[in-house]
Amino acid sequence: MKYQFRDLVLTFMSIWLSLSPRCFSQVQPRPPQGQQVPCFFIFGDSLVDNGNNNGILTLARANYRPYGIDFPLGPTGRFTNGRTYVDALAQLMGFRTYIPPSSRARGLELLRGVNYASGAAGIRQETGDNLGAHTSMNAQVANFGNTVQQLRRYFRGDNDSLSSYLSKCMFFSGMGSNDYLNNYFMPDFYSTSSDYTASAYATVLLQDYARQLGQLYSLGARKVMVTAVGQIGCIPYQLARTRANNTKCNEKINNVIQYFNTGLKKMVQNFNGGQLPGAKFVYLDFYKSSQDLSTNGTSFGFEVVDKGCCGVGRNNGQITCLPLQQPCENREKYLFWDAFHPTELANILLAKATYSSQSYTYPINIQQLAML
Image (cartoon, rainbow, N blue to C red; front, side, top):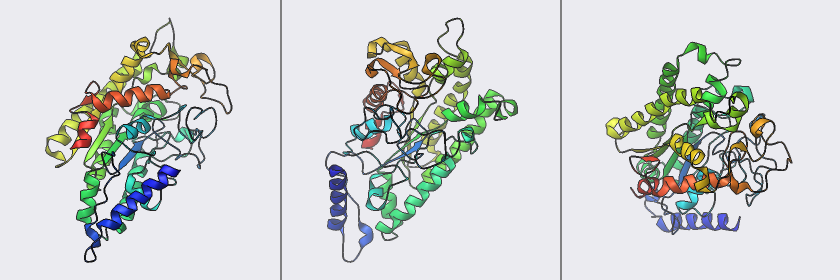
């Protein structure tokens, strides 16, 4: 709390010192020393949600122990034992405090960025309805539009100055997993698997996603990271449901999501090729990274790669962590925290790999994107 207050004071002072009696609109707030970009805006699902689902009626919530058992602030609504991927990434970019959830971000705090992510959210509007309320990607984009309107007040309506400021910020969008887990591969609740072939479904998803990302661009996003869908055929939830003959993954699911991932990478190429002038998109290959962490787990220190640290049933994957359940003791030895989500250590390893190397990034890494 002390550091968050100090950052807000520094941000306010930078604005105040930049003021001209004649032209308030020329304000260009400077990030605190060591912070590589002025702000960080986050869109996504439970992999990066940091509390936006806490106050709504949904099964997709994590504001209870043992979630957050290793996080300094305890259970905040993060779906893991500690930091999420974007928490670790923000620290690598020099942010001294965590990006606040949109459910409580207010005032000058908006200048540092906002996390709009919501557990169970997807690209399609209906995705995740089986779990209850959530904030879809459409709604997250709309919420960012509201944020831009609020920020415009700090720039006295000077759209050029605001656009210049936002062009220096980083944007992260991690969507698509729930459009498969909580839509396409749930035929008892959704008709999409009978309405579309795997290829056709990926096409309509990407069309919607391109529209949503285009809206972010029109609102000022210029440095954008988008993630592939990870190896969701290998998560404990799927292993608990379909594992047979000692197979390690549900390859049918893994094969289907490749249509989306391949199309998303092509979309990034098109965006960077002139479709969205002045923008730079980076594709984060979460499929390959999750595959490497699972296949070569021992080289990263993981001893258990096929079951959750907490949960219920086979592979601890049939039900997520129950309130006050005792999780595994050696959490750094587990790749998965629960039926769906990685542990803090896995998040940190991925953040470091995507930040400073190109093992899982295209066409540049995140550090290079921040420096543009």
